[in-house]
Image (cartoon, rainbow, N blue to C red; front, side, top):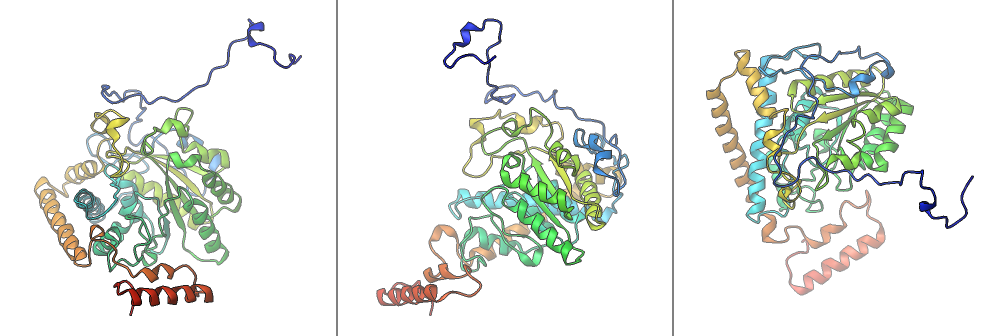
Amino acid sequence: MAEPDGADARLRPNMPQLSLHVPEPRFRPGDPVDFAEVDIPAAGAARRPDTADAPGGFTELAYTLVRVLDDAGNAVGPWDPKLSPDRLRAILRHMVLLRAFDERMFRAQRQGKTSFYMKALGEEAVAVAAAHALDYEDMCFPSYRQQGLLIARDWSLVDMMNQIYSNTADRLQGKQLPIMYSAKAAGFFSISGNLTTQYPQAVGWAMASAARGDTRIAAVWCGEGSTAEGDFHSACTFAAVYRAPVIMNIVNNQWAISSFSGFAGAESTTFAARGVGYGIAALRVDGNDALAVYAATEWAAERARTNAGPTLIEHFTYRAEGHSTSDDPGQYRSAGEPTAWPLGDPVARLKQHLIAIGEWDQERHAAQDRELAEQVKAAQKEAEKNGILGHGLHQPLDSLFDGVFEEMPWHLREQQAQMMAEEEASGRPWARK
C-alpha cells in the first residue's frame, strides 16, 4: 500500500536506499593505463552469415568483434575479403594521405591560417576502407571526422583546403565551419555541426532511391555519443520499417568531446546492440582493421542492394588526438591511452599485412610517406594563393543571400540590392561588381 504523502524513507528501515549511478571512465589524467578489461576476440573467430539471412539469426555479431588481421599481420577467417595487392596498397596510400593532410592542416590552424580543424588520427580505416567497399555513386552522409571518404574518392585536396581556409575559391562561400565539406559530385553530403541530423537524411535518401527503383545505396556515420540523440532513433525506426538500403555506421572512438562513451550507454551493452532492438542487422567491427571494415561494409552493401534491408555497424576504434583543435584531452583522460589502445594503429596494421604477404616493404613505405607529404604541401601552397581565413573576409558581403533559396524571393533580392548600393557608396570593396 502506498505511504501517505510526505512519509519519511527512514520509516522503512527494511528497504535499501536508492542511489544514482554516474558513469566514470576507467582512467583519469595521470593514471596508469591498462586495457585488460577490453575483450578482444581472436581474429577470424566471428562467423560470416549469408547476406540474405534474417537479422535475428546472427545477433551475437553485435556483441563480439569482426576481425580479419591477426597479431602477425595475416588475414584470417571467413570475413577475409581477399583483396588484391593493388587494392590493399590503394587503401594504405589513402590512409597515409589522410594522415599527412590532417597533420598539415592541424599545423595551419596552429599558425592562425584557419580557425578550426579536426584530425582523424587512429580512425583512418573507418572512412577510407569503407569508401573502397562502396560504389562511387553511393551517397555518403558523413559526420565531421570522415574526410577520408573524400580522399579515398580522389577529391581535390586543394578544394578541401579552400573550404578550410574559407578563401576566394571556397565553393561554399565561407558559409560552413572549416572541415564541414560538401561535394555532391563525390557523393559526399554536406556535413552538419548539429549531431546526427544526417541519420534521418540518409535513411530518407535511401528510401527515395528504393522508391525510384534506383541501384544506389546510402551510408551514414555518427559518433557513439550521438546515438543518444533522438534523430538516431527516428532514423532506425524508419530504416527498419521500410527496409531502407542504408548502412548506418557508429564510430565508437571511446570519447565524445570531453565525456567518455559510458555516458552514451557503453557500460550497459555495445552500440551495435542498438540495431538488434530495431530488428536491424548489426555488426561490431574492429575499426582499426582496414580489412574488417572493408569486409563488413561490402557485406552490408550487398544486403542493401538485394533488398535485404539496412545494416548497423559499430566501428570499435580510438580517437588518438583531441576532439578538435579547441579541445585538450589531457584535461580529462590519461596521456597513456592512445599508445596503450589494444587494437593498435590502422596504418601500421595494414602496412604489416602487406609486408607479410611480400607486397610491401619499409623502404617503399618511407618513400610513400615523403611523396604524400610533398603532395599535401604543394596543395597547401596552391590553396593559399586564394587566401587564408586569418587574413579576413574573402567573400562579398552580399553573397550571404546566395544559396538560401533555389530562386531568390523578391524581398531578398531587394535587400541584396540595397546592401550592394550601400557598399558601393561607402567605398568598401565587398560589393560585387
